[in-house]
Image (tube, rainbow, N blue to C red; front, side, top):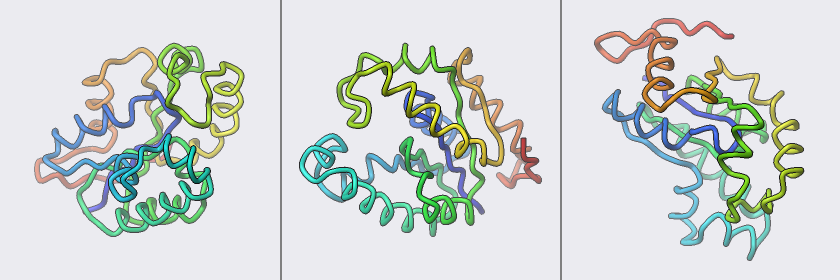
Length: 177
């Protein structure tokens, strides 16, 4: 059984939706950023501060390679995980890739005040720049769900409906957007 991989910009709800989706399917849930933290005993912020983005992306690559070999897990990726073609290939090979999208205004409202996002530094301009740069990559997903005006259950139900969930947890064919 393939995995479900949630991609998208920070603040779109990947971790929150991922946990609820995994519960609905009786699958395990893994957040790649949390997994990196467990492996390194450092928070994402600490890795960036002490060792830089290159080290973080290296750790991320190792975690993604391991997770992509497992089955029946919901994986919430970091916002930049799939910018690495090797990560994209590994995750897509054994997973249905779903992009969670939210409007730029919603993203700024959700994360603009946070100081623990190493690539943003709380700047609205930094958020806008990263958000714009990453949209083309996220558009490569099997399908996209807009989370801007939806609650968690609405997003999870839309994902399950789009996957064509059957009683035995198998999924019918997934049509790309």
